[in-house]
Length: 573
Ligand SMILES: Nc1ncnc2c1ncn2[C@@H]1O[C@H](COP(=O)(O)OP(=O)(O)OP(=O)(O)O)[C@@H](O)[C@H]1O
Image (cartoon, rainbow, N blue to C red; front, side, top):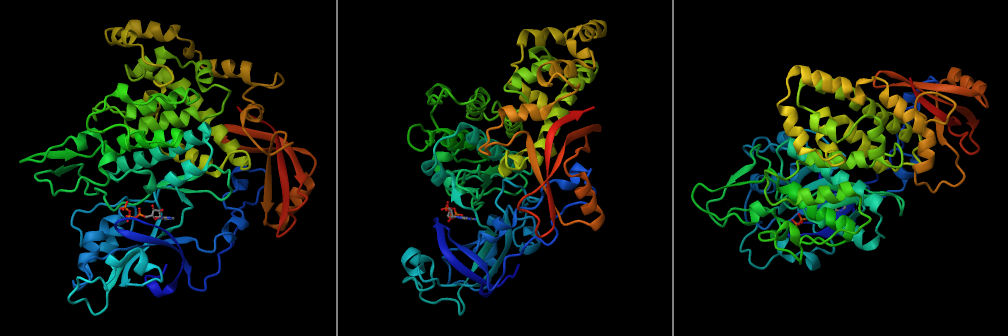
């Protein structure tokens, strides 16, 4: 992407804050890039090759101004050079993995995020160039221009920093006031927010200005579930250290005082005082979750972050899922050392979103997970090994369901499929066991008595547990899940029952295989039309087979040959 402002054409004004104005933009005389290679494989019997991994062309075409350019306000047009711009504004680049190179050491210990994340604003490039005075600039931000009346002299060529980002559709604040409440969507938004917090937390970055104007959403169709990103890192702490010295009032504690965690808002400046931001964003995501589910963040007006107690928190609507409710209360725990870690909160939310059965808790129970197993997890390696077998089967099911979801892109939103991918890419067993406590609260008495058991007692406990039977999860599930005719899991039957879909009349899962593939594969597709065939892949090292029919697609014979694969059943063996 070019690093000159002349290479971009500005579109509409998108918004402004105290530090910058943001406009939509496109490359001058650019033509939208159509996907050249549809990314489809050659073998019709390999599921992984037919996953739709490129957006439909219409979505690419539909965005005439695909970028957003943040024009930073330079209030020091009387200073020469560029260094001060990079130094004072460079922190905005915390979400940009190339930032260190770009800054070239101008910001000392600055440690930006090392990679892109689907729930963190996508920065494409940044550069310093001449100040572009747009037609509405004088009216909207006169003080940020070199013509502001207090300058006695200004640099020969007034400049500023520009940040080119992906353009998003709306802020969270706008979204909650323009869309009807939908608690399923709300939970997906919450989970995305917590995935972003998990990523920032992992890399020691605190955004420090978590308000709903700084949470951006992308969706193409009006009732689509939005993709959520955390944006505006202008107040971020990204030095690799959670602590800052707070010796006087002048030290910045981040953005809006109303959205500061209790440990920040109660800090008093003084000698050797340090303020720790490790759990600050996590706390703020609790207030934002209220906003997602009820439109109102209790800390904007009702409560004071410095003085509230947990009993002051307003009740959440009764239809809010019990996991979301408890996660929110735990996020808003005053004591940062007792506050739930963002990764645990995100995992709990993600687990609550799986559809393997009407009730995730019931499904887990049938796999042998219970209050007892969550109490036992991590207690001894012997027990751990046994109960992890049950957990691994649950994980296989979750993975299988995700693959099925990818085969049914019209049934599961893009945002949700991305969320699953994000979650599956980072999950580990310990994290899941901790999150499972939201479904199966740990029995403290049981937990304490296990501490004192000797090896023999543990062995006998293990042998008495239902999960010691390696097949228990299959048995439990197949009795409730399968269609009575075949062994194993029959996940599509479940999906058909529980997925909320507006695709009328679709029975089972239908995936369009748009194949611009070799002639040989095309012939194979044609030969397969109408017959019941199997597609296979592997899930957690176990064969995962879809059985179904190839059907000719009415509308999609161009540009390549297209068929649909209607999945009748899916089985893990
Ligand atoms: N990538 C983007 N796509 C679409 N709109 C955006 C984008 N980035 C920012 N905006 C819009 O511009 C507004 C101002 O952006 P931003 O919050 O980054 O500015 P700021 O001056 O740093 O704000 P603050 O005063 O909170 O520090 C946002 O609230 C949003 O409405």
